Image 1 (spheres, rainbow, N blue to C red):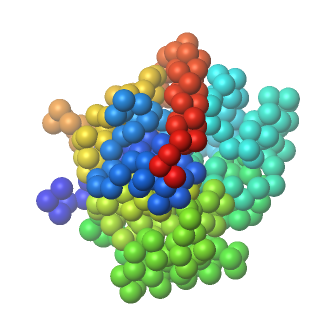
Image 2 (cartoon, helix red, strand yellow; image 1 turned 60 degrees about the vertical axis):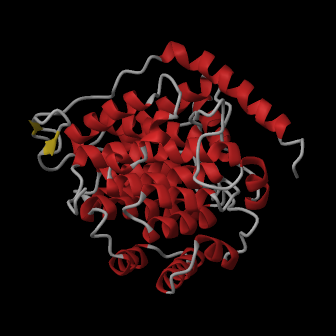
Length: 375
């Protein structure tokens, strides 16, 4: 990037594609300890291992895309946004996804049974809302007063535990900070100051203190994980996912590869932590900073890399804030919905059910493989 801040198309596309590569690379390692993952997949630079050297997306990246689509449908009011997201979650669930969190599953079942969005959430501090938070913060970075209401609407749709909401808010504010300042302007001290003004939960504040202290002494992600009791892998608990993803991003805000690799190698819920950290790094450094081998290795449809790039352009038209530069060299004026105000990007829905069946078959093969050595 030659020291320059990425343009808004690059950043919003980066938030989506960063989540996608983190999700796809972490998916085969989900639930494994760091040591077992090394025995199964070896050491060295991360590469795709889901199917024949290629990667596919799970619920983490899919939720980021659905959140982006809901924002494009209803960007002015958080209540209408929640209803737009709820309809997408229902459709996603009815297509039988192979991966869905327990709390999210219960909440969507309630939505399908007719519960309103204000009563669909269940009491859980799982990290599901963290999947949806980066794109919210990235899109609403120019109107920061809107971030908390939209994060609240997104979170309470599925998770009502205040720890889930505050954890998602931390991730959204971090994404907004990255978008506003770019990879060379991220300022951890300023960000932590803002987070402490917005967060009340003592456990989350203590975790943020650990992150800041470990950053100050140049510690590794493995050292932070050990201090949080996560040496065998990062769990899907929001107060574990958030500090680890935040730490790996702040260590390498302009290096998507380093950020994603460090968080995934910590093990555990690797697809979720990879997606969250990847979205933060992608939103900060832009899609152009994501390794091309990682993007080229994703083989998925209809939420393909090409489709997500188009979605990023559409988001920039709506939430660009200032003029953004298209890759072909022209300029598109995008000032929060004046000239480029467009709705959700069409998605070829008939392909989703057979795609999900294929994904499930591959995931089951991975499950059987894990029953075999090396242990």
